Image (cartoon, rainbow, N blue to C red; front, side, top):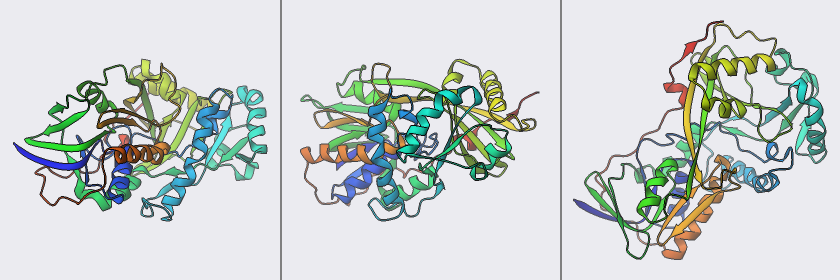
Length: 392
């Protein structure tokens, strides 16, 4: 077995792992990243790409702490996307500079006052009907529509921009064995005939953090999963990014639009995705069509294709609550990390860099090769989905 040493090993090539790798290398650390499948595979490429600014979490006041933490993060992203801050994401693309917020008729009275108050604070802007997105204007919506300054990113392009300068450090390898340090933490990882030692190990691997938690002595009570079943519909659909809300933090549905060769995919999150977890795919798609028909009564849904994508959101244990920020748990030279939301990736990378700096000083970059293949880019859920039409 070949033994190779690097200062830092990051595990998991999602948004958190890539952002952390870029920060570590820029700070002078000899760091590599291990990815079992492909760049972005799982939760990152399954995300809707929304850079939340906290508005939807503050609608009823119950998640005020989350809303406050989220306010400061989109500006960091926008500076990176403009190439004015490192890591530069100037090569990445955005799908929309804003989102929209609207309520179905039955919830207008409850939502209107709260959203109106936030509009007074400049967080949202009420739109005249002629400025509504076509999907709401032509779909039969009645009531107010608000605009949120929340950017929606094209996730794969962001991953490519992050990975590009450090692609030779992103290796495809599953972990066969963990070698534990008696003092706490890890000594080495064995991956496909290669033994990798490091001074610091950082796990940003979503559900993969569970095995690391057990191996490194964190135990099995530090992680939790929350199931999600996203529903997708594709065809000749108008572009739309936003939330149909009630007077609760959870939208009835969150819709993002993604171009494909067959028109556009509406990728459905929020309540539609959470309610679908206890349903079969057929039931979930029918329920989603029923809800969309109520929200857009003037649209015809015949002939469109539907699909589902199931994932477990991996998070730090939060007693079944929505985690209120990024988390980094430490044991010796090893840390388990979760961004919990796409937008938190820069904040989590800050925590990871601070943790590393307490254990190591930057050193020379190694030149000995690591006999493992480079990781490729993963796929969006709609690129591999089993699409079908639904009977009327």
